[in-house]
Image (cartoon, rainbow, N blue to C red; front, side, top):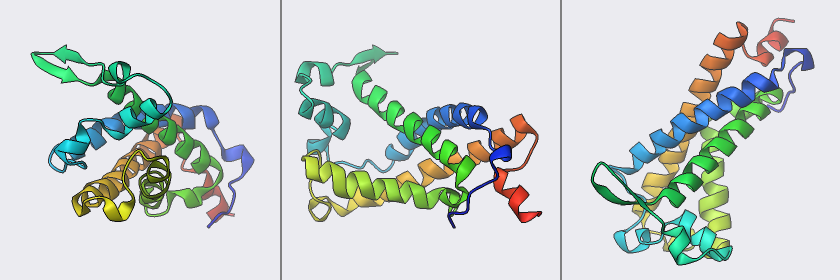
Length: 181
């Protein structure tokens, strides 16, 4: 599963570019997923995890809840959006770079990595920091939203990664060369 690809078949610049694009698109997809399946109760949504994390780092409530108005819609939390997009872009680029070397990260078309990230952040790190309750104290609806939401988020990144990488380089993924030897 953790077989390495041939160094000559890797293209880190393309991986970073498609990771950036995949991160932006997947962040929008994750937003869309949370419209019909909001992950938090209204009470907990007053301060969402990105805001709570920034407050733990010492940012003021006024900063973390800064918002803007667009097309008559008030209270859009730009700081939360920035963290949301930053998280998606960072992990999409990381995933795409790792996929150049270790194709095993693409298990189940990236879904396994998405669920892994959900577990690390939503079941371990954020509860340990006090950003969200322990997993057993979270409503089951939160898990129903977050687990498949992370799976779909990473699957979208993989679809974009594979398609754009292959289009830009004109070549299949690096591990394909391993299979033809």
